[in-house]
Length: 289
Image (cartoon, rainbow, N blue to C red; front, side, top):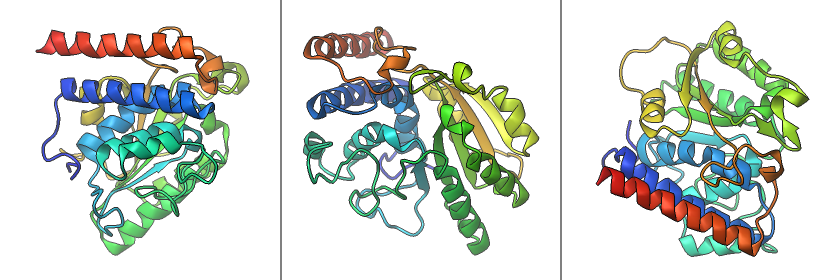
């Protein structure tokens, strides 16, 4: 199922260019706002890029289309990445990104479905997105509807027990129209996930709950496309994609560092980060041209 945002599935090179352009936009937006969660934004950007420009059946001109796929950002603190992707996908003007976190702005710190087109449900308190996603998928199953539900969760978020109740329910009802994607960047606020409450072995846990589990490099566009696609035969059960990522992906001094969970770059750090991301985008274009 291809997104109506893109008429044809873009190449890995096109997705890379777009993802790195959006990383730059997100960084500038967070710097202007003076707040945000840039580390998780960067780790999830490639996942969101593949979803919105290659996988989801969504229409920015009709965001409430009853036949649309549903996407839920359970790790709602990474709203900056989702807002950036929605703007580039055409759900609202890119210029609106300049209002991020401003007083009374529509683009506040966590997604709000009453304010922003393309947002399915309000998220922020962790562990809430997957239960809502299970309800959405169950509703589609009972209506015999073709649309699918995707939920992006953080790995630290899996310390919340509500996720595992939802996982059992999804398995019980064999919700093959539901996909959960784990942004496995190994860090949460303040420390590594393993130093807080270890969640491994993730693949084995989800499999034991009756899910079809895949593990991929969360920055490999081709691997993400293949894992998230509905093409080909698959078991009649919910799917879990463990996407191994890096906190702060793309900026060397941010990668795999817990402090960038919510730290905001200084003017000098912003310049260094933008230059590095611009160079990586150009190198990729040159290599694949």
